[in-house]
Image (cartoon, rainbow, N blue to C red; front, side, top):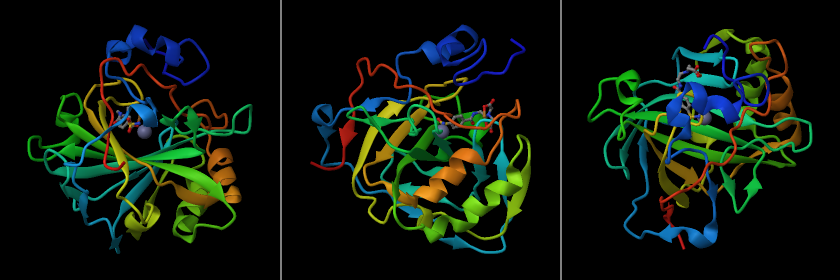
Length: 262
Ligand code: B30
Ligand code: ZN
């Protein structure tokens, strides 16, 4: 102990996470490679009903560089009220991205082995059963995360302009700033009908196997420049460029991935 975990460098890189965090070596880990030919269509899976995801004004949302990602803390008025086994309350959202080396892509989940540019995680806890994220985070029915892929395109996504510009203000690990206006719905794809669902874990230590994952098939498009800014602006705990903050795909073992679509 003592050393902080990392993705790729040092003595506690992702291969060695299980040495310090036993759950990271479990049988229901995330992320995974989603193989389209092996997913099971489930016609009973309902579309998610999300309330409070639209524009919130005069809020006070903290945006933080925590050294391994950029995170925005979300208001507890954001909830998933239908489509999951319980009601879930939003806690935070954060991203995982790549770099400029061998492979620029940095999403965590892959689809048929293909890695998208980046990935957004909107983290929720089961508020029917638990009183807080902390109480829920290590329970098997504790968390639900919505995951969205980013691809690069020709046009600037103006719903991301403020977020991308604000990265400069949280450049160094530990820095944070307040955001007053936030519209999470506008930062998601229009089409939320097509998704995959499976039981997995936190993708970082302590890797608790507590997450019901919903991975959306429709990606969010950012411009090449927006992606480049995401990949090159922030610094990690060692004051090096914060990039490639993704975990490799983990064994599916005896799990089944379901889909909402054929
Ligand atoms: S994820 O969505 O599976 N990538 C946590 C939440 C979601 C995911 C991974 C981890 C989490 O809450 N981890 C514990 C809290 N963190 C502090 C933090 O806010 O950012 C402790 C830590 O890792 O050392 Cu990071
Ligand atoms: Zn994540």
